[in-house]
Image (cartoon, rainbow, N blue to C red; front, side):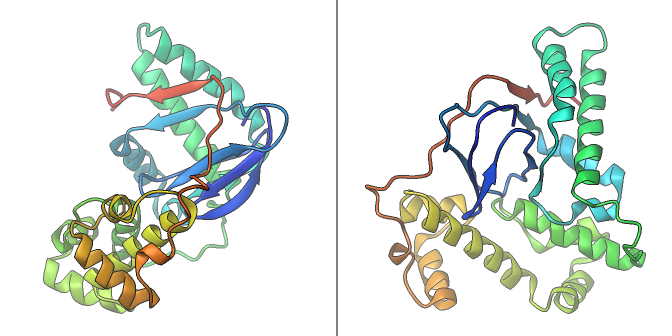
Length: 253
C-alpha cells in the first residue's frame, strides 16, 4: 500500500491496511479491499504467474511455504523496487525479463523475512517430512483446481499408495477428506463475505457438483450453504484501488 486506509478481507477475515501494508496471496485465497478513509487506496497490484512463484518459493526452501497468505506492515521502503519492476514491464529493454524476474525474487525474499519465515530457531525436518509438508502446502495452494492423489504424491516424490498412508499419518485425515475440508472452509468464507450465489461458490471452491457440495457442506456444518450466504442487497466487499497496477507476465521463466 502506498496511500489511504482501508479494510482487507482475506478468506472471510477482516484486517486493517494502510501505507506500507503488504501481502502475498496464493491463487486459492479470496480477498477484497475497501477504502475506509477520505483518501482512495493506492497500491501496487503485482500478479505473478503461479509457476514463477512456485519456482521462487522452492528456491528458498521448506520454511517459506508455511503460513499463506503472508501479511506484513512497514514495507513502504520496497516501493522503489515496485517502481523499477513497473518500468521494466511497461517499457521492455535488453534483459528486462531477467531484471524483472530478479526483482520479483528479491521482493519475495524480503517479504518472507518480514513475515518471520527465516527464524533460525525453526528445527530442521527430515527429508521425508519435508516432502510431505511440501505436498500438503501444494494442496493448500491448489485445492480449487482438479487435484488427484497422484498429483500430490509426485510433489512428495512418493508412490501414490505409500503417500496415501504417510499423508493420513501426517495430517490425521485421508487425502480426499483433507482436500474436501480445505474446499469447504474456502466455500464457507465466500458465503460469509460475498454476495456470490451458492452455485458460484460451489465451483469457485473446486467442487464440480452442486448436489455433492450441498451434501458435504451440510455434513460438515450442519446447515445448507444457502443459510450462510450474505443477503444479496448488502453486496460483496468493495474494491477501491488507484493506479500502480503491475503485472508480471508468464513469459518470465
